Length: 576
Image 1: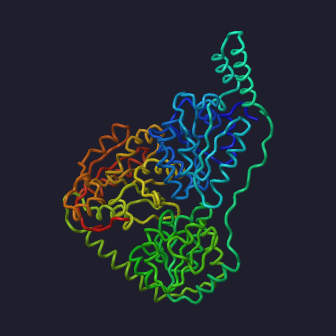
Image 2: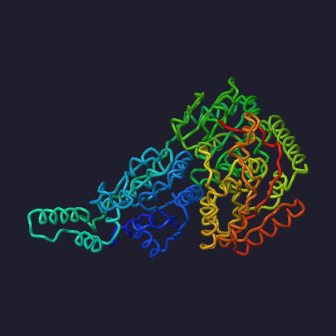
Image 3: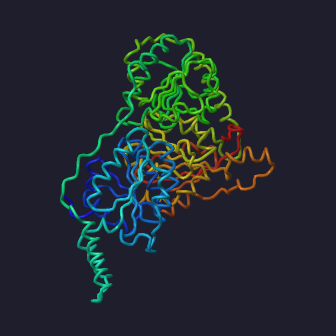
């Protein structure tokens, strides 16, 4: 049994398969960091707590093991809230460990002491404060199970500092502040403190109970039969697969094969992007039209939220099947004809096994949708050929599509530029696209890139930044450099918050609040120890990208600052 609380925390992390610990240091949490280093966990210290949580989120999505971030008390915890909320809405199962003041000083005005539980409770699945050393191991074991069970999500565990340090050290701290007098009040205070300490450390060395099991909702054979029957009848089926289909990362390859065997025209969103690579079964354009013409629509881990027009994009006469781990999302905005509370990847694999494959099935429907994709792709290529000031963003994205490696992981952090890339740059493999999810959070980029490069050290990691989003985490180039993580960042620099400006200027006649400048982001990256390039001439696009790839292959974090011209490609694209 470990000798102090910090070691007990790390013991649990190791048993759970955690390899990386993301943090920004603080005295409240030092014992965890020291124990992690001694145990061989890789401790990645970042420049903002939100980055630590975003990195843990990325590890959760890519590895199937909940990522872990540890932050100090007070502002360390408050700085993490946006990232935690993003993980909650993206259903990412991560663990956030928060330091806290000593148990006996709660509410007495000690440094950075606030009510962290009230602050965090609305944004996590489980929010728990550990009160004795013997609670550390069972609480953390339950936290890992809770994060992955049912609808996955983040869990917050508060760990007071006097539980983390060695018992001898903690007792010395308390003794130094005890009253020394022999009066009744002094003796009573010493007795109270001594009793408090005995409670904190009681039971050290006892063997904790077994870790709880992870529970995942299961579909029934009747539900499977109903959906298979609908597929056998359908003439124009459409599958829309979202992040939940790859939520259990080790099963992603099997789920990919199942979808290919089902042979249903498929649209991918969220973390599912890349699941089918360049297979023609995967369609990217005119999804709304396909859904309005379909006679069977299967939503696999996709709610009827703003991305599907709150269900209005789907043909009212079509049979709607929804498979989701969340009961709330299962019927959000539109009740399905067949609702299946289950893990979507497992359901699709079972459906593929139950359905006799027919390569000719729905061939005319396939060809109709593929022709639409082809026409849209051709229109994009024509727009990419248009001359603009500086670099045409579509030309940049289509060139990236040609040049990224077969193992590349793509990170999207931005608005207009990243959405343009989503139409044009195709992830090659399952679990190779990371974006914030439905919360639409800016600032995820550096943390996601950290997590991705650690999980996939041999892969190219391309961080596609909007110039507005870039500023949120640009300082993490220092982190990339210190930890020898050769991430490639491409900044689409159009000197504006273009996603907002496009509509605001038309509606209100002013660009107020949306204008930026062509900042030298590459120079900032150089200042943090990385390589930096500025690109403003279309003739240099291919050779500059080659240089960027070469620098990364040699172990350098690199930022390419691309000055963009204006296009109408995404006019009228604001979401509400």
